[in-house]
Length: 282
Image 1: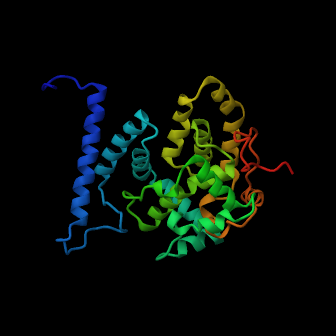
Image 2: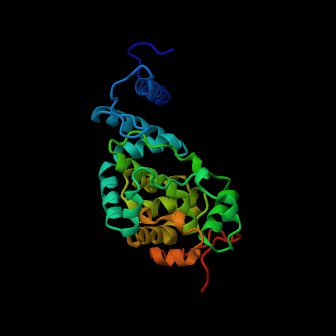
Image 3: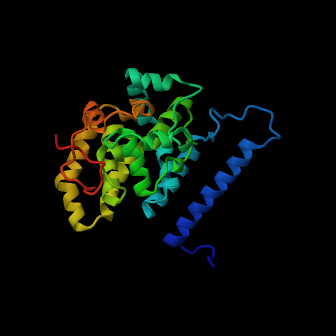
């Protein structure tokens, strides 16, 4: 039992933050989905939860603490990204607008492309030849037992177009694992996060790239510092904007050709030696 005047322990502080977030979600979910309300509720897109600057600050603090405590809390990482990424999202949106293919993606206002199991033709993709982007992406999903449907819908970005940019970033994450030939273990995730930090400038990516290495063993940390880290940062900063690619039209493209088009060079170390999803030696 906690008495008034007693200092909070770290566990109690974390519990209070979780309670606040749960109450906030429940209240906002009721407020903005009530069938009795006939008035405009301020939502800019179906999953939108309008928030004030103060609410965003509290959410950023709470989700940041939760994400630091457990980096695998993807829901907290998502909230942190949405409440701290406004300026980075504007820059990403502008890069997409200035890219012919990226502009085409943004132009489909009523039917912007989404990467979901419901939008993927799995039968067709599984029939593609080895080495094609679609076949290797499907192999990645199966071998790592992951699905694009686990990516949460954006809620706290107060601009419809910027919300889509954030959503696109989330759904492209697994495609980056395929493009970079990185596994889903901690080292692979940190390498991808370093690439994303240099590519997007999103604060949550920068934070993940800084704190992720703390969870690595000494040998893997050395590998990251000496080779994979510099490679990821260099390629992330020089590559074409990865959000500007209409991946849904690229499944049949050779994976190495797509990497060359994006200006992504082979990694210095092959972390998936047994996988067919690797850079060619040509």
